[in-house]
Each structure stands twice: as C-alpha cells, then as structure tokens.
Image (cartoon, rainbow, N blue to C red; front, side, top):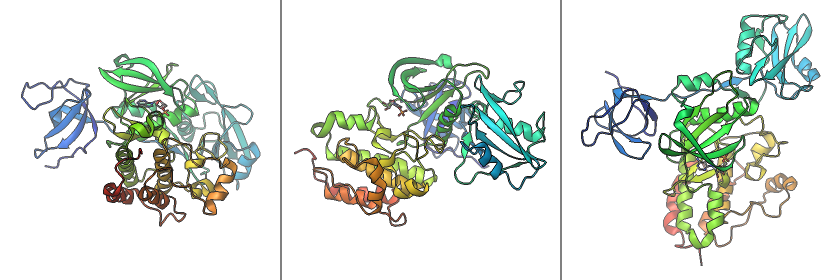
Length: 454
Ligand code: AMP
C-alpha cells in the first residue's frame, strides 16, 4: 500500500470529530484547522498542532489536507497599451486572434481586441458590480472566465476567439475564488471576529481579530477589481507555503458571488508586529547582536524555502518581516502577480531594495531576492535606517552600477558587513544563494561580538 505522506507544516482540517480521551491524542472537531508538525513511524498517525498551540497525535483518516490554489496566467492580457498598439500587435491579421488591454477611454474597464477579416474589432469590457461583461447580459467573475466563454462561442462577437496573442515578458494572473472553496481554504465569516485596525496594507486595512478562539490578523479588500485579483493572488501563493519562517495563511472568506461584501484573508497573528518598527522603537539598548543574528537566520531560512520552490518574493525588506510572540521572524507580503502595480513608474516600487539587473532589465530571480536580503541586513544592523541615506532615488541605479555600495552600519560587525557585500555582488552567479547565506550565518555566529550596544 502506498501512503501519501503529508509534509510538516501542512494545514489540514478535521473531517470528523475526533475525541478518544487517550493520553497523547489531540482531540478536535469536524472543521477545525490543524497543522501537521511531525510524521510518526506509523504512516496512519501524525503529530499535529491545533490553533491554541496544543499538540498531539491525530489519525490520517480523520483529517484532510488543504490543497494548493493555483493561479491562472492571462498571457493574452497586455495591460495599458493604446488602441493603435493593439492593432499593430495583432498582425498579421488572422481571424480569431485576440488580446485584452486596459481601456484608455474608460479607466477601470478593459477592451477586448479581436482580429477578423483584416480588421480589428474593439469591444468594451465593462467592470461592474465586481464582475466583467461585454454585453451586460452575461457577467463573469474575472477576465479568464470571460475569455473562456468567447473561446467556446462567438455569442455576438465577430467570431469566436481562437488564438491568444501572447504577451512577451511577465504575465498577469487571475484567481478563481471558487478554487479557494474547492481546496478547503474558504472559511465562514461567522467564525471571524474583527477587532481594531493594526495597520494599512496595499489593498485595505489590516485588522486584529479572532478566528475560532485564535488570535489572527485579517486583511480585507472591498472591490473585486484588478487590485483584488492581485490580493487573491497573494493568498493563493500562500496556500503553497508551509514553513515556520513564512507567515501562515489560515483561510479566506469568499463572499457570495453577487454580493459586494469584502474578501478577507486570515493570517496567523504576529504579536510583535513589523520588524522595522520593532528595531526602530527598541534600538541598540534592547536588541543585541545575537537577536539580530537570529532574525537574519530566520529570514534566510524562510527565503531558502522559497528558493527551493523557485518562488521569487520581489519585495523583501525589513518592513515586510513580522515578529511573533516568541520572537521568531517571518517573511510576509508575497505578491507574485506584481507586474501590474509594480512597474518602474509606479510610486510603490522598492527601488532601494531591488537588484540592479531587476531594476534595469526586469530580471527578478532568487538572486535578486538575495540582493534585497543584503539591504534588509543593512536596515537591521542600522536599527531601521532608510537605506542609501542622502542618495537621491534618480541617481541610485547609476551609482550602484558603477560599483557604489553602502558603508558598514555604525558598530556593525565587519563579518556581517562582509556578508552584505556578498549579497550585493554585481554578477548574479557570484552572488550568494540563500542556502549559502544560511551556511555563512552559522559560520559567523561564534565570531560575532557579544553585544552591539556599547
Ligand atoms: P501589510 O499589508 O502586510 O504591509 O500590513 C500592514 C501592517 O499590518 C503591517 O505593517 C503590520 O503592522 C500589520 N500586519 C500585517 N500582517 C500582520 C500579521 N500577520 N500580524 C500582525 N500584524 C500584521
């Protein structure tokens, strides 16, 4: 008999009530969330932890694994291009060749461009009530579903869509909310209690809350526009991640299809908040170089896990590291579908954290994350200073390309600074990997000066 083993850290759900009263067993109810923490010699039993942090043995046939939610790429989506650009792209004209772009005349709407009989037809795709429609008769949850419909049937268009015009470079993604339901990540709003606002996220407020007696952080997004798709894309990436140094997703509240209720993403609560604030508020007096080392190791382990999965973070920075009650640092803010709002023109682009090859040629990789990790180390050892003090943003890329690197932060161990410099090597092949960083951290640990404070 072949058993499918459940990896450590996987989120599962009870399918039946389980309560034997036996010492060592972990009782749970149907629908409870459990995290597998250890395999046992018996393939039918796992050690698991519940939301209160209690652990014990659970039988395999009483639990079900939450599946990964996959994103759907939209290779035919070309973003903000003009009508005439679209017509140029759709050459040579071939019946049914199509692309979708953002509408220039109606911001927030889209345009479907279809080549037919040597001409290009442009159809307005209206974004209304969190749905998209061409004919205001049939509505779709996202662009992918709309395209799939017209690939099956012309339904009023000049012809059926037969061939997507594939965008060169990075693609945007759509997320099917139904997938969250199917894969076991959907949770009921009634199980959720919202508390005070913790902070502002990219998409909306972040609340403190409770989910089935567990303290949680809740991110919300009200509309279902492009931003909401990016928000859900982040959650769907998180369904694939199981590591103690990455923020854990607990579930997603998916509103009824036709309602205007917000979408909520429920995350494990990090009591000590963002690392940047943690370091700025406590400073040298309260944080030792050992503490900094431990955070650096935590972050490197989380990033090594992403590296093994070939997932690129793109926005690693001290502001995106959160600290738990037990002072464990965890990486947060995974937006994979970042191409949209993360273009170089956008005000939000983290220029000072981004590797030169990524800034210049859009070459994001695990190695560009390593560059950002080096910047994060610099932020940590300078207790939350903004990187490249006094360098104007517009001069930064040229300066860095000509070899300029930040100085060693005040009172920072030289061996730590050496590590930063190895993260900032121009040649990505020479730059360290996260696996190597984890190793280097272990090597430098015994050589660290005992205290960073004088
Ligand atoms: P973000 O959208 O992730 O940048 O979140 C904005 C702010 O909300 C952060 O700076 C934190 O202060 C807070 N926050 C986000 N996620 C969590 C969490 N899991 N636990 C505690 N606070 C959080």
